[in-house]
Image 1 (cartoon, helix red, strand yellow):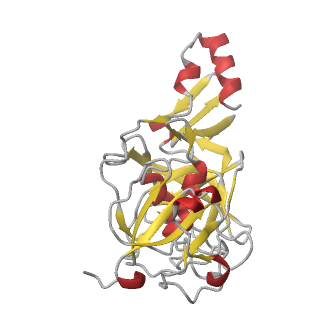
Image 2 (image 1 turned 135 degrees about the horizontal axis):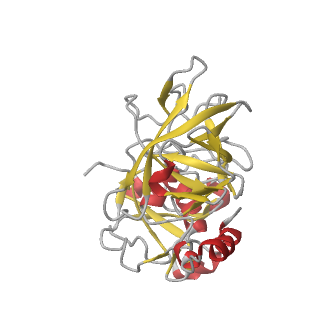
Length: 323
């Protein structure tokens, strides 16, 4: 039972007339993310590491959790009738019993691995993200291995447990192929985005894919951000960056603003770089550089291209001198 039908049912049985408001999509405050424009490190990972600790950028996705099913969702041994997300808050019901928020601690979902097999995943804790992202809920997660032992689902480079945030839809984690890095909306599946990966980073940088900013939906901006932060210029899921490469980025809405006087590099949309500034030779060896290089990239005359985001690189001709 999805939100619209649930609201009708609640209003009829429990007289909760405020249901429509409580489940309405979030509208971000205009000043939430413009006070501290970001100059950040780039990075390769789209969504953290897999259950065996191998880097996501490897070709073997057999043990990488590519998505999670909303249903069945089990709480205390009982299977919920339905479960879904509103923002990063889980909702569900079992008969007339409604569950949401912290009541999902202990709920077990079914995770889908790259080889088509499944793995139990459970929520062990949750908390609001730090300011200015306190509207986002972060979750501690565990998966159960074939030996029956529960282990952290998300880990950092050192192998320490890290949290994740849930986002509706699924991503294609393949690299160097048509469709690689793309997002698909799916009412039956969602993604637990591990902190440190591009999917989580972009949501925490203000591009809430479930929300709007001054009336403009942010889903496309979030996807463009995942392409930009991984330097997926060609839109094939292939990252052309090294961790530590610095970028200054901003968007058409003002969620993030231009905060450095660096050399312009590229315009971005959901499919990668729409164009690359021809005089910025940082990535001149790209297979798609010649087809996308444009002296007008980033100029007023090119705004009709439909770019959602823009980025710059530091140093002469885009070479980062680390100054």
